[in-house]
Amino acid sequence: MASPRLDSEERRKAIVNAAVPLFALGGFFAYLAMSRGLRFLLGLTPEGVRPLITIDTYFGYTMAMLFIFGLAFELPLVLVILNMAGVVSHAFIRKHRRVMIFLVFVFAGAATPSPDPFSMLLLAVPCVILVELAELFVWQNDRRRARREAALLASEGLSEISEDTDSRT
Image (tube, rainbow, N blue to C red):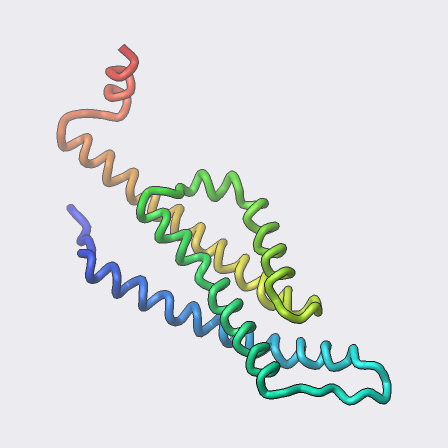
């Protein structure tokens, strides 16, 4: 039994319907990190010095945090799209998982405008969890794709083994 496939318009809507909540989730985590980060930065001012925070600097800080967190939370969607396009497989993600997690932490440390570890962890830990969830989706998609290809070969009277032996001769 063939599974229903999405046409290009439905695929585009599905991507947008996933991207907007992921960006909003990133914005929520940015909101949580901003108060801690701002408190940390203000705590660095010496005794007797009044910090001069203008609306421009606060607005810039807020926009940077929202943009960085929102963009970082789109990473799992990028992995899923690349998998659906056939560029990235589950084997590739499994092989490079440690490097990906390390790079998420490096990005989080470099991208957050405040130097406090709380902001970095508030960005990195949810991103790692989302990457792991994306890996589960990629694993299921690869299994579904392999079953579909096996069924197509079986319907044509071929098998994967006979195809491999034919290509060797």
